[in-house]
Image (cartoon, rainbow, N blue to C red; front, side, top):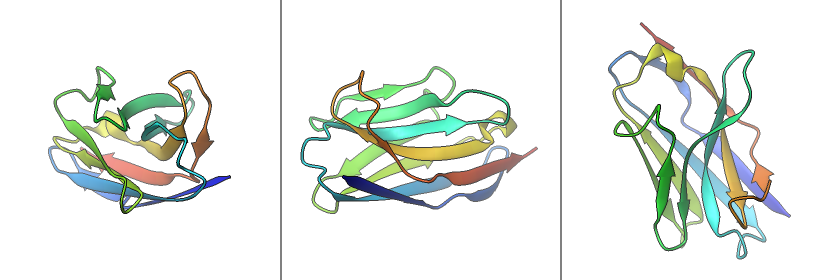
Length: 117
């Protein structure tokens, strides 16, 4: 079992920044990929960004150049730096840990991010 706890959500302003953090615990040794998904009201949950153990990153086109994902395997944490926020970034953000890209993996309970215009 893997437990993931997100923090750092809240209210942001267009053009501003927010930082999300996720603390992992449990059996995460086999979780090669950690990252973030988001779900906006009435929409499906989609990948925002993820990072592998060797530091390879993937970003959705909608956040590329604005968001940055990082991980600290010693502290068992993953972060998401969100810059140049847009109202369309408003969503519940979920931390994710999975073994392979095609795996479902584990999700945290989510943290709300709301961006005002």
